Length: 281
DNA sequence: GCCCAGGGAATCG
DNA sequence: CGATTCCATGGG
Image (tube, rainbow, N blue to C red; front, side):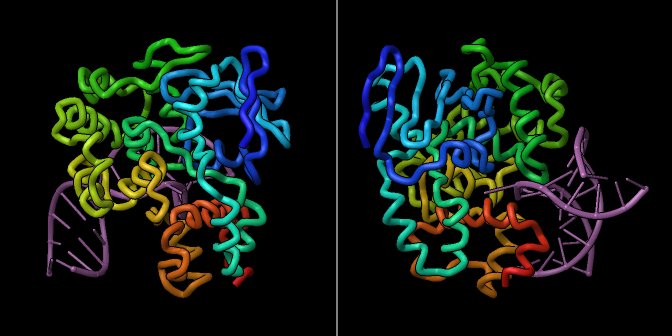
């Protein structure tokens, strides 16, 4: 990967096969949107990002080299060798097809607290509405940040009641957000310690929070902690695994990167649609 | 009106 | 244990 400074911007090139749009809009992050001139705008790690994909290079507007290297290489998972991973996964014909359309996705390493809230909100919900609820959560309870609002802290949410959250229209999930904010701000669930724990222990620790079960916990382990062997199983992945492999798991050789495979398959399956998955078998 | 959405808690046998 | 039911809200 090449990193260079141009004015107040960062230009990144030679990063291999990477699809910024898919990475930001494949159902793992909910705070990015594309403006009509093709630029991606969102708020992550407490700052507003403006990014443009030029095909053979990516521009991060108004960012220092130090900030990019210390925070956003990790956030965008630029150091992982996706080319080799994709070559390995392509030995499976289903994943080969998925990689042809989704192989440019990187797994993001998002803020832990934000990811916890985002995937609590995701349960029994659809992506456009998840985005709306998160946006209202930030507008109502976050701090001004760039052209928008930062993600509110756990302490801020812990100071609120379920009724206070009514404007965000999260439905039955509001009480789960309150429970998460209280347990995390009081260190009853220590999100820093989870980094050191085995995935099984980490999952149980996260499940102490009401509204977090296996699937949401696995989303947090994958999309915040970068545990790319973890596979969250939602309705699309369940359908796909059963249809393509006859059981609810990937082939064994995939296991170290099953979380990445899962994300490729998630996008591929949604693109095909329910009927499309049936036909492909 | 119905069904579905990146599920989980509560309840019941 | 496994199976059912309910949960708020909004789009198709």
